[in-house]
Length: 276
Image (cartoon, rainbow, N blue to C red; front, top):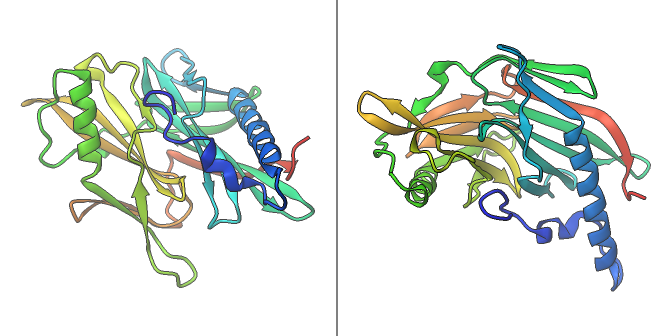
């Protein structure tokens, strides 16, 4: 990623196309770029807006904040996008695909809302999702949060340090054991308002492979004692998820529990495994 907005490189997608003979690198890179173009076109077809007040449209960050793959899930790969309001991350989506029969790939999308108002999403003018606002009680102060630093660089250091205090688990299915998720070292997205201590924040991800399973948003918020760091978690997977802060569980979603701020839809499109 350029700056703080991308934590991956072209190397993360090296395994997307099976290697057979020397010289396949050019084909792999060509397919990577074709899939990237496809995912971006999908993201651009969505309009996300706040339903109240005034139907304010959110701004799509022009480039994906993450290219990811999950070899443990049938060579699933995709890209992660962020929509903002005043530079703050208000919505996140993964657009991804996985192999099915007849050399085809099934396309899916997963959305999270971090908006403080009701959110509506359209696909080429067709509504497909409505999410309620984040409830105030969902924001939790990071235990032992320091006072928010004055400089942007120092605040980034604080957020990265605080993010490492969290650990995450993905619940096993079909008798499998729980799997520890890996925190990506750099944030996927840093607020564009990072020069303002009262409106700073960053989006982190706990991943399997490089596939985001839990999203962790850290944000500066005012308290009676001054500016402190708060966190908000979002599920980005269909299975059971657990977030802990220094070994104390602070957030959990079970596999079948409804999450109104999360949407997962499969089969929104079907594409050949090798794009033309």
